[in-house]
Image (tube, rainbow, N blue to C red; front, side, top):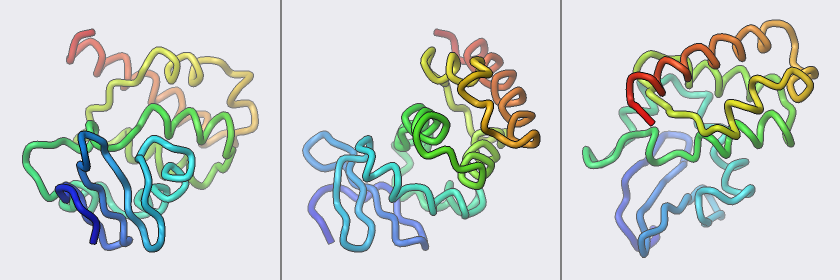
Length: 145
């Protein structure tokens, strides 16, 4: 176990800590800042869990899952670099759940709205893109800028 305060622990052996004011990820033999590309790849199996399982893995009531996970970076990574419809489908299903109030960044929204960037997605995932844009705009309106 690493130093720091454990704030998330899942049955996928994904642990997230606050360590020296950084959010860090631990999984098996990996330990790194959660926003690094290596960490993004390590986070993906988390989305094979249900939203309930993910939310229940929070170990501190002081944090929301939207604040812990680098959702904007994950979205951009999946669409622009990884290009895996499997992970896109799982991640978008997570984001579309009503309990998740993710406020997407302008870069993430722009990426979703640019059809040239998501042309590789199968039709079902492109439909999820449209649903996610709609939900994101609602969340932004609800939460404010």
